[in-house]
Image (cartoon, rainbow, N blue to C red; front, side, top):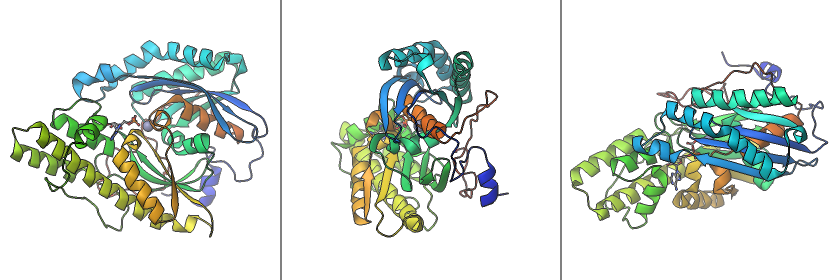
Length: 383
Ligand code: KG4
Ligand code: ZN
C-alpha cells in the first residue's frame, strides 16, 4: 500500500522539512565507501558550513580486468575483489586528503541497491570503522548519492530533474530534496548501459561496451541499418531497450560476416536510436515535472551514471534542454560513474540534517528511491 504523505514524513530516512536537529551550521568531513558493483571506491568530502562541497580525495579502483573475460560483472568475483583492496583504498583516501579517522564527522557506506556480496563488504567495513572511531554511521542509497552529486559539483539545489543512466539503472527522477525523490520513468527491461554492453558483446567489441560502441560509431553511418525507437511518443514515461537490442541482433545476423564498416554502421545506428529514445523519454519526464517549478525558477536537468560519458547522448540532451527552457548540468565523468565522493557527499547532506543510521542497518540489494512509484508494466529487477 502506498505511504500517505503523513506516513512518509514519519519515515526516519526522510527529513522533516523544518528539521533543526542537524549539523548544518558547521563544516563536516565525511568518508564515503562505495562497493555496490564493480568499482571499489573511497573518498573524503568536506561540506562547508554554508553547504558548499569540496572533494578532498576520491580513490577508485575499477575491476574491468577481473570481469573482462566474462563480458559482464560476476557478483562473486566482484565481492572478492572488494575484500582484497577496500582497506588500501580507504587508507589512500584518508592519506590523500590528509585526514585521520579522528578528524571525520561521519562515515558513510553504500547500503544498496546493488550486488549483495559487495554491499556487505563496504557496509561492514564502514560500520566497523564508525564503531572503532566512535563516529556517526550513514547508510547510503547509491541512487540518492548519484541524484545529489550536482549539489557537490555545481551547487545546484532541488528541485531538479535527473536522468540516471548506468549499467544497472535507467530512471528519470524529480529530486525534491534530500530524501525526497519522485521516480518518473524507469526501464521495463534492460538498462541503457546494459544495452550498450550487450551490443558490444554481440559485435565482438571489448568490455565495458559503452565506450567501445561510441568509438566504433564515429566511423559509422547511422542511417544504413534502420532500428526501432521503443516507447517513442508514449504517454507513460518509461524506457524499453529489449526490442532495440533484438532488432540490432537481427540486422547483424543478416549482414554477417561483419566487416569493420558494418560494425561501425550498426554501432552508429544503435547510438542514434538510443539518443532519440532518451530525448523523447526525458522530454516526457519534463512534461510530468512541469508543476514542480515555480514560475521564473531556473529549471535544471542533470545526468549521472556511466552512460553520461556518451558524447552524442549529452549533445541530444543539451539540445532538448535548450528547447524546453532547461539548463543541463553534467558532472565530470569521474563523479558521474560510481565513486566514493558521491557517497560521502550524500552522507554529509544527511548528517547536516541530523539523519544518522544504526549499526544494525542491513544491506538492501533492492532499494528503490521512490517506494511509492507505480510499477512499470513488465518491470523486473531494476530498482
Ligand atoms: O555508472 P557506471 O560506471 O556503473 C554502473 O553501472 O553502476 O556505468 C557503467 C555503464 C556500462 O554499462 C558502460 O558500458 C556504460 O556505463 N558507459 C557508456 C559509456 N561509458 C560508459 N555507455 C555509452 N557510452 C559511453 N561512452
Ligand atoms: Zn551507479
